[in-house]
Length: 74
Image (cartoon, rainbow, N blue to C red; front, side, top):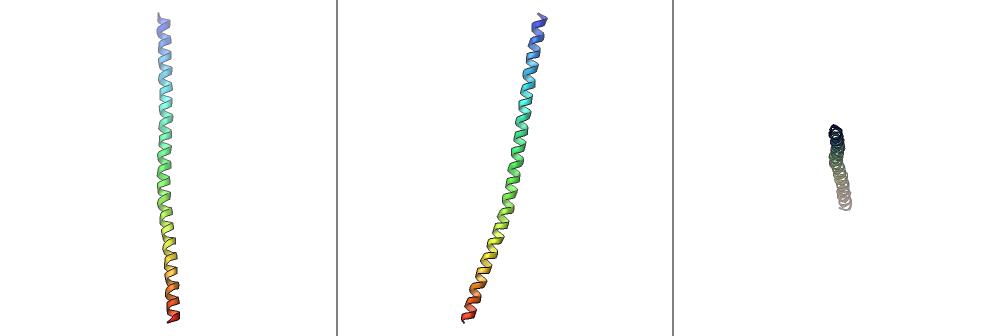
């Protein structure tokens, strides 16, 4: 009788331990993915600002060239 109860308790303890290990692994994965998402969002912001500045600079340069050409012909 006691042997069966002890075995059942060992099985239950083992199952709980495995469930806790799985929950811990999934929590770690979720944290890692949240961090990766945050990093990607920040990188997107930085790259968008960089792209917009380069684009604005190129447009300004083209406008300056057009104005210089117009001034040269008048």
